[in-house]
Amino acid sequence: MRPLLFVYRCKLFFQPLGRTYKINNNANRDVSALSPSETGDLRVKLAVYGKGGIGKSTTSCNISVALAKRGKKVLQIGCDPKHDSTFTLTGFLIPTIIDTLQEKDYHYEDVWAEDVIYKGYGGVDCVEAGGPPAGAGCGGYVVGETVKLLKELNAFDEYDVILFDVLGDVVCGGFAAPLNYADYCMIVTDNGFDALFAANRIAASVREKARTHQLRLAGLIGNRTAKRDLIDKYVDAVPMPVLEVLPLIEDIRVSRVKGKTLFEMAESDPSLNYVCDYYLNIADQILANPEGVVPKDAQDRELFSLLSDFYLNPKQPKTAEEELDLMMV
Image (cartoon, rainbow, N blue to C red; front, side, top):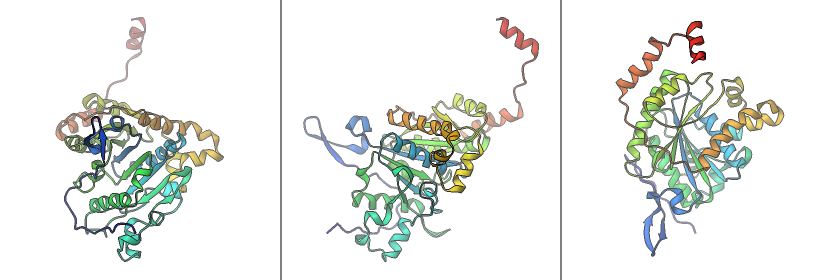
C-alpha cells in the first residue's frame, strides 16, 4: 500500500523537499543545496516565467520537445489555473491535479501516476496543476501540493528534465513557489517596454530566491521579435545571458491555436525546420549545465527611465557622410 497523503492548509512559503545523498566520507548533505553537477545527477529543473501573453507556454512546449529530441526524459508541469500550458503538446486540455482530486473525493491514496500524467508529442509527459476557483484560494499552494503528490508517486525522480511553466509575471510568494524547486529560471520576453519591465521584476524574484538555494537565471528568451535593440539595452544595464531571440513569424503564434509544436508542424512543412533549430539551441545551452547568473539589482524607477528613454530619445540614423567616415576608419 502506498503512503497516504494529507491535505494541508495554505502556507505562505514552500520549501523544496530535498533528498539526502552520502558524499565524501559518508557525510550527509542535502541535495537541494547542491547543483546537479555537484551531485553527479543529470537531472535539471527549469522554471519559465514572463509577462502574461508573451508566449511562455508555446516556448515551454517547444523547449520540452527540443530536450526530448536530445534524448532526455521530460516532464512539463503547467502552473496556471487556466490549465492550458500543455495544450500544444497534447492537443487538448488535460485534467488537472485539482480535477483528479475532486473526482477521487480528495482521497490522495487513490491517485496513481497515470491519473495525472499524460503523454504529449515527442514523448514529453505533461501535468497540469490547475488552481483554485477564480478569486479564491492560493495558486501557489496548488503548485506545492502538485510537487508533493508527484514525489509521493515517485514520479519526480524518473525525469532528466522537469519544466515548470508558470502563469504571467506574478511574483507573489505563491506563484514564485516553482522557483523553490528549480535549478534555473528562464524569462520569456520580447523587444518591448512592458515585457522587459516585467522581466526585471521576475529577475528580482530570482535574486531573492537565490539567497537560500542554488537557483540561477539561465537567461532571457526573446519571443517573436524582429529586433533586439531594447533587449540589448536592458542586458547592458542588468547583465544576463540572452539564450535566443526567436524570429517574428506567424507560424509560432498559429502553432498555439493548432495545438501543435513547431516540431510537429515541421513534419508536414520542412520550411519550419529552421525555427526548430532555435529551440534546439536553447536546449543545448541548458544541457551544457550553464553557470547562470544571480541578476543584479535594478530599481524600477531607474529601469523605467532607461527603457522609456529608448522611445523618447531614439538614436538618429547615421548620415551618409558619417557612414563613409566610419568605413574610411
